[in-house]
Length: 98
Ligand code: SF4
Image (cartoon, rainbow, N blue to C red; front, side):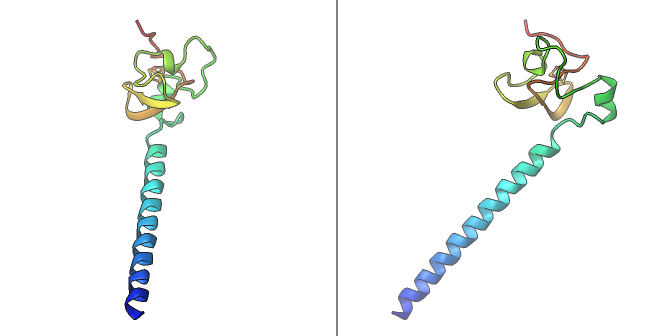
């Protein structure tokens, strides 16, 4: 009987530890994704008049050759290396896909 209780306790501790680890990894992923987004107030972004909402629906990041994944809501942009921009964004470096 005591052995069964100890086993249950160990199992619960393992499950709880796993849940904590999973929650930590998920939070870390969300933080790092947020950090990777281009801040419109950054000097490089301002220099290119970067905006998260294009004024012209025909010239958005998702249609730009520098946008890494046209099907994604946010994706990398080779002009802002290592950072992401939204599909509906725009900057003066826009160049259509050929
Ligand atoms: S270069 Fe400009 S328009 Fe093109 S994907 Fe990057 S931020 Fe968007």
